[in-house]
Picture 1: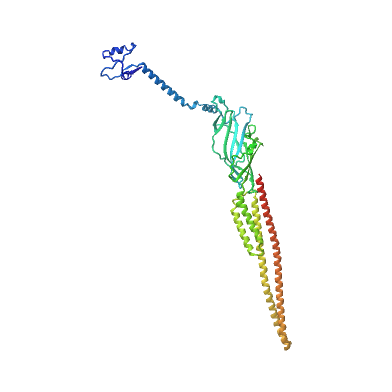
Picture 2: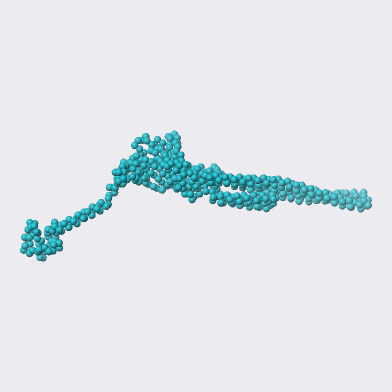
Length: 496
């Protein structure tokens, strides 16, 4: 190795110096000498020249070079390339010649078994009018892919990896009761273990068709089913099975949110084969049984309606011919109508089934209208009878007085021509007595007419009293039957 001369003086400042005359000889004999002599450059010369380096300086330079190489090697080892990782090599090996269009079995006659599981997370909406149930479920499906297995000892003991679902074969499992677009978060990856088992777990918002019965509202219990099956593959290609035990699925309520209007009772499951012209298809059906929490409806709907009926029952204690009864019942009817309008949104409406509380409201309103109509007719009949009674005595008095005047006028000339003056003197008191007699007869006729009217009024009142008692008993029977039915439904609801 050689260094510039100016640097040599810095490394070995104490080396012996030589004269300028010996410069050429020294330099020429430097290669053959065992102890090389370093020459000082001539005066006035500024050019550099290469000179031999001592052994100590050469060793230090060699040491620093080795350290630099070691540091570069360490840095290169600390940043491995992605292509050299075991996970990258395993993923490339699995997907390099994988075809997702082919069912992943080596023997095409062997069926691929898909294991299903379902957990109900929440009941989001129950649309009785459109017969729809909206739920949030956690759906899990597991199947075996024979083309995605590997020896974990060759890949740093990797037992499980995540792969994109879009690059793999997946079973075409659907829910038959779907009536809307499936809404679920986009989860693009699935887990695959070394034996080829694929686990696909995802949450789904299911809007399904369900036959909702609201007869026992608000103590109703609904049973809706979710039926899973392959849309194209028969049971010879894709078979279904349960991922968990059926008892565990039925009693699993850990993930269900109980702070909503509905409570989860059970999730029963069955396996069946559906036969059709296209072949036999494997199906798994989950029956979700839920019930409504009735306390809010009891406080806001049932108790006020029962109070209104009790107030209407109190109107039967008023006299039937009392006009205040009509005003009272009219006010009750108006209040009942306003209550029904305000509560119309609370009561579910269905074209195929009418709730028991709706029937009760209709019957009570019909009885209320019937009782009010009866009171109106009674007042009308009584008013007509009293009006005719007031006119008849006047007609009688007016008819008697006219007859008396005509009789007196016709008999006056004859009496004057035939009777003597003595008889005419005695005729005046007899005419007065006849007048009085006719008046008594008129009064008697008036009293008899009034008595007849009173008898008719009594008969009408008697009939209406009996009709009132009949309505009252029907009212009590309906109210009692309705109360007993609601209590029985509540008791059955509590036992489930």
